[in-house]
Each structure stands twice: as structure tokens, then as C-alpha cells.
Image 1: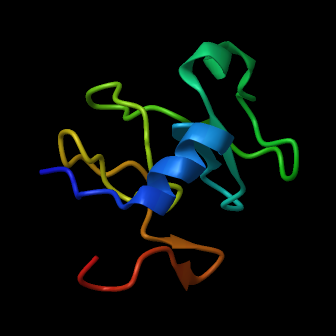
Image 2: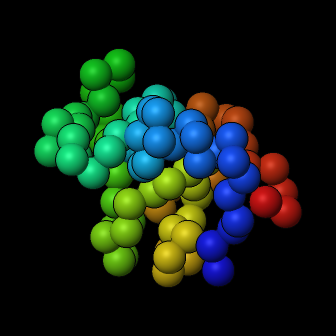
Length: 92
């Protein structure tokens, strides 16, 4: 089930991009619109790590920079920690 978005989240998405791409190694994040998806880096320009912008299980894009599991299918999309720091607080 998708969480409800508040107005500030929706405004941010319409300004910066509806979806996110993140580096699995260093945690760098880029926001993008679907029209610009082809321009996303395949590897992180900061560390050279693999980037991910769609769920490997269902190909859904990620609306949250803090996603550790897919909002559509629930599949894990990355480890819950980056550089030893938890991405999401427990219960979120």
C-alpha cells in the first residue's frame, strides 16, 4: 500500500523530479522526471558504484530517496544501510 503524500512532498516532486535514482555504494541520490530517465548515470559519478532507478523485481520507479523496498511490490531494492548508517528509522 502506498503511503499518502503531503502537499510539500508533491510540490518538491513537481519541481525537482517525481522519481529518484540512487547509488548502491555511497548513497548519492538524483531526482528525475520520466522524460529524463535515459540521461541517468549507470554508474555513480562520485564513487563509480552501481546506480538504481527502478525496482529489479517489477521495474517500478522509486518516488522516495529513502526507499529500501519497492512501494509497488515490496521487493528489497537496496541494503537498509549505506556506509554504516541506517537509511530509514525502524517502523517507517
